[in-house]
Picture 1 (cartoon, one colour):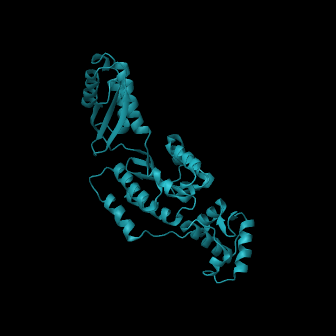
Picture 2: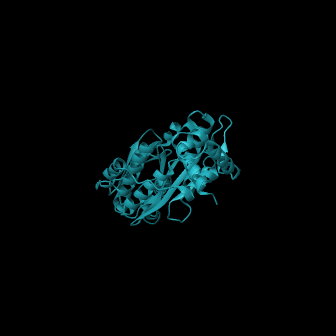
Picture 3: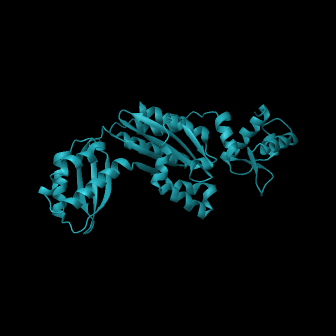
Length: 329
């Protein structure tokens, strides 16, 4: 258990380092913590021995360790209320009645990403209320095309599809069959409908029925199961921890492209806000992931904010709480 003075020193060092990633020295701290530099140095040494602070090679100051950030989040952090400007930007999105919930979530995460220069992710948002309105197909070349999926809530998704030696006429017949028989089906039930209502009869309409059925089945299956949307991936480049380290940014970018890794963020069943610091994030030792689950009607998923280990924890947690509250409202 830390003393009151040690708590003050650790809190001050963490919050200063979050704002400015340069080591914090005792002289700097003595200006706000009314204690001599010598006393503060002794306390900093004690905190270093406890594994809560680290000393860099280039300065006599200290920086928070991974354990130091964890102690700060669990014991010292005071939640920061959203300011009026941030709240207004998000309210504009949440009050737009023309947007489907999935679009509201994505647009609000875009706002947060732009405000904070962090990467944001929404995972596993599936809907029983979004109904399939129609699908369309746009040919790219002889073997590639784009399938456009439109829901009744106005949500539009594009998926690439490849076929071999199948005429456009057969593709269009399959599209008409799906639109006539499955339009109005909840999105998360479309794959089942394809299997039990389209598969038995598609051979009556098209020659390459097996290839066409499999292609459209995979398109819809991907649409409902691979719900991973990463917003602001390039924001990592604006963080000093990564901007000058090409190998590190390549590693982080590869992790952010790994859907299986990102989907593991939502695996636990805890609905509270969870904070994964450094190595806990499974992305990088300099990365933090803060996430929470949401449930609104029949839609549920996980929203996460990914940033540097010296993330503005108090502000991010406050924003996620605000988002969760508005989504579930």
